[in-house]
Length: 371
Image 1 (cartoon, rainbow, N blue to C red):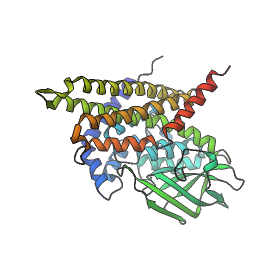
Image 2 (tube, rainbow, N blue to C red):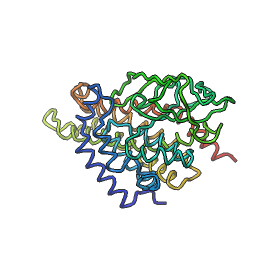
Image 3 (cartoon, rainbow, N blue to C red):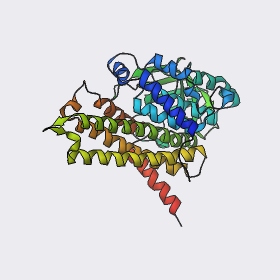
């Protein structure tokens, strides 16, 4: 079974890598981190013009129609660049939710705008610290009006449209579309470990809500969305881990101590070898996840959990060892190591913690291996 990407997708990867190296160097990430702007608007618009916001969206809705493998390729490059844009919120989650559950009218109304970048979407599930759990959903919709709060919501203070997980009048969980510029919506920016990626608290007080998908089917749909997003986030994490490994290796070859490059010392070699092994293991699991999405395989929940767990572990190790390899310089604000460490920590919690996905992995393996 061949999990590798096609030549066309490899060309897309090379194009994205060159574009991001030119338009999104780490000084752009630092500018957002240290400034007041929640994201780089110029970069976001340039990405939209490249057609990447709709890479997996069918052509009838203005997308490129390259499928989920194309989205995986882009995710890895965005992860390596630490691009300070709402790509994951708008593309992996909001657009996917509408594509999966929206009516024909909703798809025609929202997807072309999301593809063009004129509309930024987000996915509002969490209601405080904790992992995804239907029992923790307290937000309610009655008479087409949403009340409750969601936090943290990735890109919540800059998004125009939110896909919200809430209870309906019968107490069943459904999905709803909410205009975040409409009445009854209040937003507050949250401080997090990675200010280059916006997080917010959304409070709804009788905000108009439009049903998305079948009534009562919200949690099953949310689970499927999270499985797909887990694969995309895994590619982001693999991209970040690889960038850390490259950064640490280059420094180890250039930095001299006792008359020789520090990369020649066994302690440094072992650290970087461990990072390499973890990153390649995560990459293999991510490719398995990409295959599962592209083929709509029954193994997707298992592949998604495996990819998520391996990529989270690899990125944490790579970001940590990158700092250690740089020594005292790695801990300074002026150094770039902390930018990757921040992103590794943030992504590790983006759609559920590592223990949550490990439990999912164990559950899927038990189900698969049951007699």
